[in-house]
Image (cartoon, helix red, strand yellow):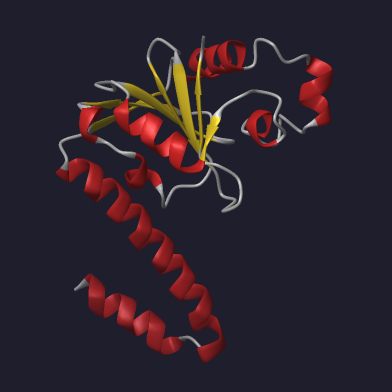
Length: 167
């Protein structure tokens, strides 16, 4: 029934509008496949609406503790937190070394946040997730509940992924 409605809408659009529809549907499918993959692995996902602001502040405090406000401004930290790694203000593992480090970490429960989103999620039963599971995601930050490590997959193919462990 819904497919017929969608087809009717598509049939009514001029050819030049279909490209926009295609990219919208591709995005929806990619997001669905990302969530389905995690669901199929038994990973639980819960939005932490009340605690999110505090968790984001704790990420900032923990992973940028040795970076001054002036340095943050210089690297456009407010635009992308991961600039602390791309501008080499924070030592970290990159690319395959970052992916392998994330894959080997203990991660029964992890926090997940996206750049610019005010909502943090808690992924439970996450021990089976690997870096590859997040390759379709952009500007995603994953970190343990104790804030001892973070893994970031950016929207830039030449930046990251990054893995940082607090010493």
